[in-house]
Length: 213
Image 1 (cartoon, rainbow, N blue to C red):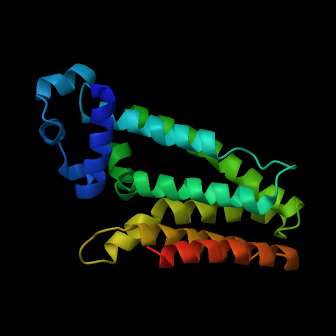
Image 2 (image 1 turned 180 degrees about the vertical axis):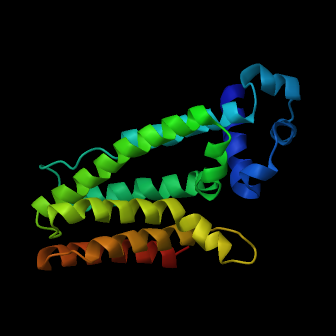
Image 3 (image 1 turned 120 degrees about the vertical axis):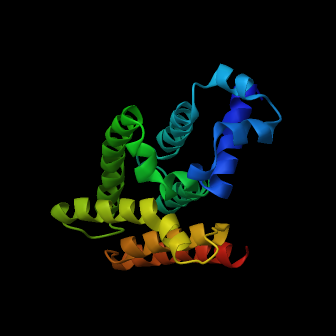
């Protein structure tokens, strides 16, 4: 792993553990046992590091959330989506926790974030519509956008919601599974008779994973 990659991974680790606002570039350099000058050789400042982390976040979504395929069983594809979503929420939870502040400090990153989120919204809406077409859920076209908004809101604000209600402010992997179960519940509200069984099986899968932590 290159020094640049080590800086990015160490930054994610420290931001998740202590909160992004509490960590400076000096903390990151000390954690890695390198000089601040060495860090600044690779990144101009902390905002530059955050932009590179956002690129990883975006790449994860781009590669893992492809359109549903007609020739692949729906439940297995949904499981893949939820596994990918789990990794995203866990690995980048600091970004969700302090999203407003991070974006307020960097106009360039905010512009990229807004553009990407609009594209992501359309991708999630397409999943909702495909599930409707496949008879998993039954939802009016005008309500598909509303469900998409609720799905994105739940994912975006689940981790800060949990941390704000906990004296320690800590987050664990079981919390992420709990968030995924909330997302499945949103789908279940629109489930058809056939889809209800499949969504119940999906819910049981993640309930077991949460219980086994």
